[in-house]
Image (cartoon, rainbow, N blue to C red; front, side):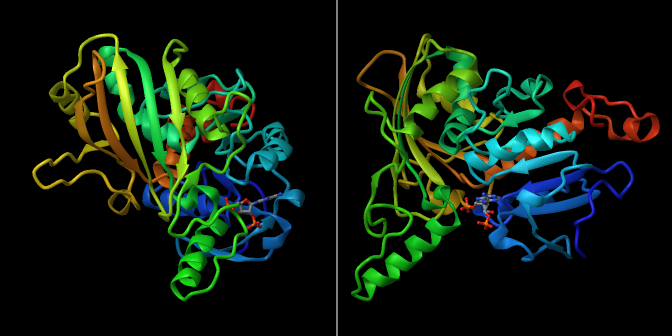
Length: 366
Ligand code: A2P
């Protein structure tokens, strides 16, 4: 079936659009919407003109990808955007003006004071206040770090954070996945590695994150981790320094985190807090030298935390190692959780009976 006709066609279930449907995160959206049994009355898939006519399957039905440039957003309730910041800047307002709520996975609006930046385990209430009808999904490394840091911050108040990341290539999109695969094959077979997406060879190598370096010496990814943490935690007093590195894994980021707190927090206390924290699994077996690994966190939504120990270099300080699937919890799952919050605070049943919205953020549309 093609879905070029806009608007919901199935009772109260919403019309969902995926912008960037053919990309690494876009495809993940479909998997996660299905896994989480997200109610969908009507689905529209959009990408660049290069993908027009391409067919994709969801819940056993075939959908034809639309050209975003030409797509009429009328009737869309929620649009999940993951097609890069410039695409979001060009199209999100147009979709919002037509009545859609946007959950944007790009960096385009994250620092806009009128756009909530949401990790549902941390600040779910922020979705209520979205005057531009846009809610931003944070940077993948930020989400993965903040899920376990939040319950520790609530207990002992974070003062200083030092993070080093080990970031999988899929964070740079579907073509970066191909690049690692091709380069690995080429190098193993004695051919030179061809570089198209990354400016350095990624197979059998690692390098400083492929984003621009600012005047302060931090690259954009590192700066995002600092600024986004401030906005999500609502606390700009935390000292943060990140070093972001791209490594030759396909999927799931890992991070080494050293966190200094205002109050004492022992490794055992942290382990106890984290073992009950939403979205976290403690994997911390010293005897077996078994700790979080990308190969085990890929394909699921929990952030694994291990190597929890005292940072012996300073007071009230812990150091630990985490890993989480950045295409899922670091992108698509987090965005779908935000969409679920929108549905929860919007009484779709009420809408169908009375035409009135339940969620102020959805007002005007539903
Ligand atoms: P397309 O596949 O047609 O290029 P990734 O992050 O994996 O590289 O995916 C990016 C996603 O964003 C793809 O679905 C891609 O579509 C889409 N995209 C990129 N540029 C545009 C654009 N200018 N307009 C619409 N979609 C775009």
